[in-house]
Length: 481
Image (cartoon, rainbow, N blue to C red; front, side, top):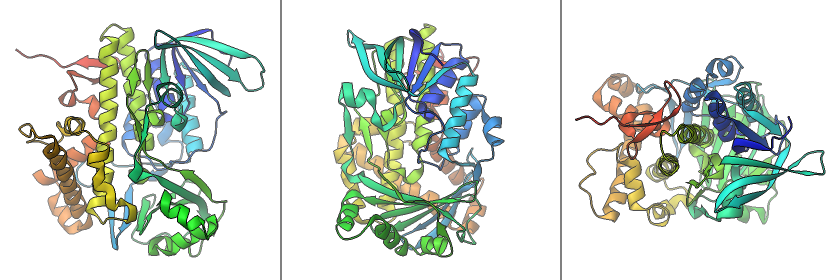
């Protein structure tokens, strides 16, 4: 498709964040152009999805399309952590979500981009944004190179959504505002196996998570019969191992550290080469500004333990589309929408960040994670974390001291993680607890973290929340007299 000279909204990146943004905007009748440097389908890691992604697909009108495609259904997770083994089934505590997908990202992302195109988004593949041009601090034009052409093109736009992934065009080249979390600097190494031996007590389609001293393993079953088997190790441990061993030896040695992964692969065959990627966790100082929004990995990325990548990408895509739609309809000011977007996305990220930390802390300090308690001092401002959890955890309004706020919230999250997993480990106790006030409270809490709290008026920020009917946009909380 040829590049236009002007578009109302320019989206850079065709992954889940960009495709979700473009799809929602097109559905609202807003002119949107999406550019991606690759031609889809293209390979990407991040194959295990949270159930909340399906809810967003439903809001986009794509749920039937994806349900019928044939992705492996994911009923939950199978944990082998510090010598303990337990299963986690979606919805077993009475929560809203019952299943998600395990996907080949080249298929999932291509289907999502196709849906955005069918909704009316102009999608241009094989186009690289080489430069952004600004007017008064606001991005206004993109200088683009198209594969197969020696000439450059310029597109003018009114709003920009940077969904360019970890490359993070705005953040790394213009804002210089990306900050890495030192305690989560990881290396991931993975390959695809055939003819594996699935654990008898692990549900078909569940993700396997197994800890080792310097990290953890994943096992993700895909619809074609292959299983993605990958290890996440801290950069320092991986670098030390590289001094004396090859990548293949490091991978094999890590398999031997996990009885679950050893049994999984003992009769199987590694059908691909081993891929490696640095899995650094980071965030940006700001997620939005005058005329722009940072979505998905372009804004932040988190340790992959909880499979949050696609969720955060699609969540931010929906938020950015709702914000821009309401700006263009004069329902909110641009400043209001930008502030709401930044706070909402940042809070979703913070909740998962604390969730990951407290999981590691509460269930055995693994190697480099022994310093995870530094997170509250290194990364999180007490005011930010208190705000992120204020409408999830009750009884915090009277805590004034900043250090007490942060410590209390960390402790409250740890307590709830412990209670949640204790119920799931003992299936007899779980059966008794289902329907109880404890189980309902627990389910609501984790639905709010792993779900879409922005859609609830009760979870409004600064008097705004996302409404999907009659149109997608930001809505003000009704004032009662």
